[in-house]
Image (cartoon, rainbow, N blue to C red; front, side):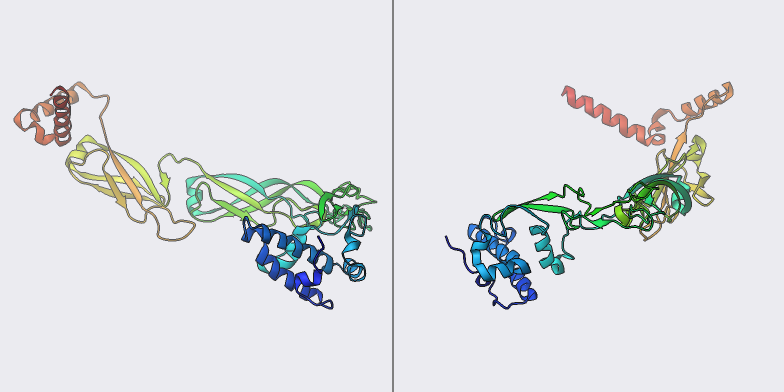
Length: 378
């Protein structure tokens, strides 16, 4: 089956500029791309036809050969036959054309400067440090650019050379007619450059191991799971490429008094049996100072009191949380004989027909138990 003229496929004239060819390809590729036409064989065939025409007409050498010899020059054994080629793959072409849409074309990783790896450092903070903010000095083992060669890997005064096999691309293609398989260049192993005279300090690696001391400013209100990003403090990239980032992972230690839940703090405060029954005041700790809390008479154990704005100010802003105080009635221990006698007298005084009015929870509980067993036996 004879192929259509490549200029006709793209809908451009024979004297079309590179810009016109790219513009035509972008329009047609967007129209027939398989992702936009799932299951449409006609669109898939049209996309392959448009792609092939674009690859040929955009390359000055191939375009000149096509203008002179037509399709036959790209048959098996022609210019497009088997052999190594340092031309980019479809990903590169698609990236060149759609870079303005998707924020920049995709380049072969071996051709692009590879940004260094990101690192993570786990830091443990007390609740006070997390709530108030603090500066911490940390030591991070990482890879940094070699000072002697500036990260190039070449001996001072020299520089790496482009690989002669891949022409600095780092990858080569094995072409078989329309199809192409991209492979890492066997000469430079994907680096795109050859170092003939390596640096004597880093032995051609361009990086060296170092323990960096950094000062980390912990913002007010961080919590377990939060991360602090230090830009450019990760591993240095290869061959002078930019460094990655350092992420400081926060973990807040358990506190012996407070428990944190978001912006709120919780704590348990013990009160005596007498205070719970008669009422009074008890001192409650906050993050700043002690404050007095009024205990109402007949307070039951487990009752919650909310102290507004005595919690945590979130790192993300918003209102300050609250302090939730849980009162726990404490049973007296190590009683003297006289104290035990007084408690027995008190217990006896609460007996009789009026006993239930002194024990509202007990009355409700035991009535519920009685109903439960009555239902089982009925």
